[in-house]
Image (cartoon, rainbow over all chains, first blue to last red; front, side, top):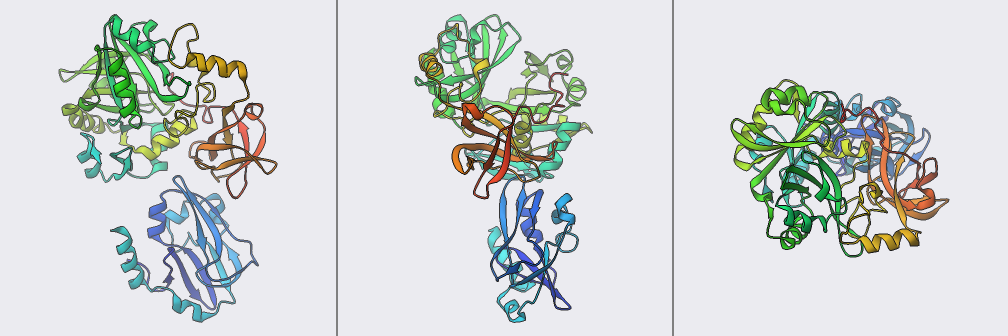
Length: 128
Length: 354
């Protein structure tokens, strides 16, 4: 049920690598838990992130929560579409609803993250 | 958790059930924003069966009741409802209440689930003619600009009922109470019905194409957009009607519990007052955020959310009296979110009086 071409954190971020650029977002499970997303605060392009740093925040009708950098790196792009259409995170969390992109990532950090099967199992435990 | 008579309906409609003051109630069905917007444009059904209801029989009983409620329910004209509050000796708000006068010698009071354990013995202890009917009464709200045209197909008595008026009515030979009130700012009705007939009425109303079910989440964003207070969150016994901006519902020419304390507070001054706050963008203030002026804490947010019909963050906050007027620049919360005091309602196109 979760895409196989990405890695996941226990805080419900996903990260997908393409040509050395790492795209980050939040999972469908997280978006569903938050409910209707009304605001996304994104980092500045050029910001340096350590793995686990608070990188963005997301607000829904019900709550606000932080989004953490699943890997360290330098922010090279942010999804400006979310400023006017934060609901894209609910509608399409893995494509149009991405948050930011990182470069200069140490690939070894990916090994600390969950693959789709492990994340699915983790989410299953959260729900019970 | 206690279940309302509509619990099975909520589960079968895919409602996401949460604990609200010990009651299992749906927070949402299709999604809070969608339900909110549907209520503002068509009509939505809300299960409010968790709330408290009382029957007050006779003049002596209503006289005793009127000493517990600050808004002079005794002198209500027949067929009318009035908002008010139940206070303690210090003027603190135990609960808010809508009282309806159903007949020359019959009144009906509607209170909230949270303080019911305190309110029920208080009311019942005041006179033997005050009866708690909460356990046998279900309450269904139908709210939205299409509410009248839908409801008259089921209950013709709804046709000419004006805002804040109420009357006994019948649905399929069952006696119910119909009140032209609500918690959304839209044209709407609250239906007080015997528990056993609630599921059938709920289903009958949902059959109409304009109607969708809505949960506590949309109920909260809808009421916040029009500045209605939530009992236990925007006020409790630590706040008085003067602080909560309820002074227009205080009948100063009557005697009620807490009046002396309110008079003293009014003459002393210097208390915090509820004000409306808003943000410039989609970020929202949240319940329990500190409010700061130039970096110093001056108040606190009691309700806050994104307002789906206004498109920005909105909230209610207690601030010093001199800041409780529109146009003051403040901040809220740990991230010092910029906010500005403003006036109510946030959403001005509500149809409740139409």
